[in-house]
Length: 539
Image (cartoon, rainbow, N blue to C red; front, side, top):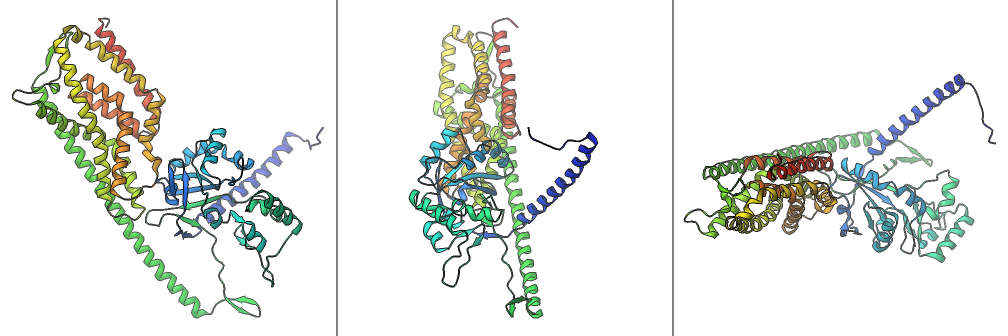
């Protein structure tokens, strides 16, 4: 039996309070270290790195996925490994949970390994992981950040480990500590693979220094107005003049000159930052101002159009319901003219209904493209919006001939017309049930986070157009059930449009969007059951 000190409750409490003070001191020290880590300077990354991801080839900027910060976890998985590092795997088991929380704080977490993408994907499926994992196979990324190095580098002593380079003797060879352990590691890795991981090669030296953990995380930051892809590095130690082999402070004139330079540079940088912030605020005001004007104009036109259609009246049908004149041709009007009129009305209505939920996605796209230094933000953002509403225009072009055909059949078949109220209730019921499906949840997540999972997109017209099309496709799939309700209830019913538009906007913008979607589904299912019961004469 394990021997352990025992005591009274009072003694335990005294010891626990003493330990609590030590814990608080550790917390304060940890907070101070975190603050100092955040204050490390940034270094611009000018080298182009390419990675292979589940979405295809990507640059370092693409790994940010449109967010301002990137956490790269160096996962030990070499090209010739059959499985990932057990320690890294144990840590990565928690990534699925907190990668979402990091994303909500504008931080993207991505693992990077040197193994080919096919190996990483197979291992992900085996472990049940879904977090982003990029392959740096064939890239210098791992070597440039000193988490991997070749056997030749180790042999020559040209290895940087834990931000320090091995000291070299007069003969130009690296200083060897614990040569026996080093030889054992080199022989082991020579038989297994051509590249040696830093943690493996320096394990014995790390243990001797009392350091048991290799830093795996690189905190890459990209703030507004700063180049994308910066890495915090240690501040270089200031080197002064030497006297008798000792460092001495620089002369007063040098210190004064340096101070003046720092003041000038600081003032210039502050002025530039102020200008950029003012420009960003002006751009933000212009964007939301134009969006508000467009929404107000489309809403006003929609209201006037609905009022004019209501003035034309509706056609009574067997079964106690009325048919909207939107599916009818006006006297003297051709069918192409009727289709063009419906399509124009449909586009304006879609702008009024979908713009409130689209504006946040357009703004995220604008921010992501703006970080690349692109100046044509207005045109590219407008092109994304045009691509988005083009998808809804195609949807309207398909809905009009279908509605006209159904209206003609209902007018020719009274028995079928009598069944329309029950059919409307069934459509509403099915639309409500769709709100609870995984299909709805998947497309809603894409609408909330933007297709491509927020990746930084190239600033060109083709990419903007395709991005808008993807947004529109995801949105049309997500809103299919709610739009079906609008079509069967009354496409020109202003109250139905307002309710459907509010439901779409709330489930997109609310913090718990999926939960809100299920709540809307419950209400819609209840409404569908009510309509069926009333049509059957039970209500």
